[in-house]
Image 1: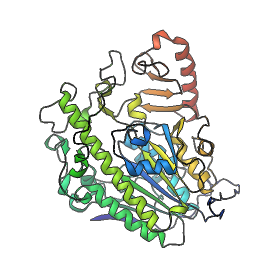
Image 2 (image 1 turned 90 degrees about the vertical axis):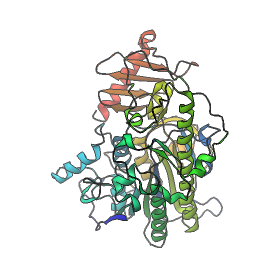
Image 3 (image 1 turned 30 degrees about the vertical axis):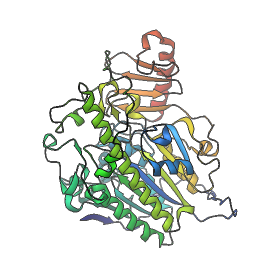
Image 4 (image 1 turned 60 degrees about the vertical axis):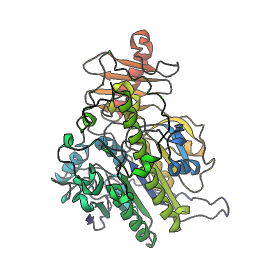
Length: 486
């Protein structure tokens, strides 16, 4: 079954349009110096994806398709999300603004719109107002398909009102988007997490897990969009490697006999911090095993996570291959974005939902025709807030004045260009990441300062030893938070 809803063309919001004209960016083919039409956008969102890819320095991970995109574009090695949870992180991606730190952020926006409050248009709505056909497939906002209700399939409760001409959630044997979100092979739906296996690898094609259906529908949508005269903005949401860690067995087999590197700094912090008990992970059926005390089980979990990454990578490859088949690759901006990081035993955490480095660090790759110095990676600090203004620049659209990020076009032009500090928030804690340090401030505890300039210091709280840096970064963090209304 495919849950689908098509919207009528909505008129531009005059109150949000900037009263200026801009020139559309001409994307130039290096071979023929031919100006292309307005570029399409293909945004691929991947859930719980660490920047643990071969193109990001992890030699043991098999991610050839994402790595190829990195070779064709710009990989941002130090991209950070603005909140370590699906809902608020995706809210920021799609709105260009910071919001509530809970998974209710997107629905709070929809509720405000329903009450008649003036809400700036989302990124897909902005593109839609500027002549694009906008389509989402799978988990792009928070729920797969972008709706609410008990099974996440109520047309009357959209997460992003006015954003999509079509927003789809293929669910097949999983019955509905909620079933697909945490589904395992052959239509198994999570009812009680403790009764669902944490790890699974079943024989069969990609379609025995929910993401396979999402990609099949994405390929169909690409074909349909390619035959239209209008430019398109297609967003594809891939669930894996989100819990539970299930993927077709062939992807797990790829890691047979491969030695994994040791888990860095696996000890739980002995100071007050944003450490948590990994409840999302621990509530699944683990056969009585705990990866924090069972090294063999920790390795097994990491292999299954890696298998899910390779499964997601294969799905990315299928989408990009279809884009090339349609003949639209040479006029399409392709973005790979991870919605946040994920701990695999670092600091004794198995999950996200904290403000440590591993939960906030995720991959970002931008590839488009005309990019110079393809394959050159950027070490600049950037954040998810920057994606919306960057896409406006690349597509030649006016940048709305409500955006809180900055365009990454200077870094796309020059991979050596400087970035900027990245902020994030979670509950009553906030953090800032610079080239050299991470500062975490809690309302109910002492500051945490992590120094990345010295080997081994990245996991040690150095706040007491470096009060000057704490003071300097506290002022910088507060300035950024004030600017975004936090």
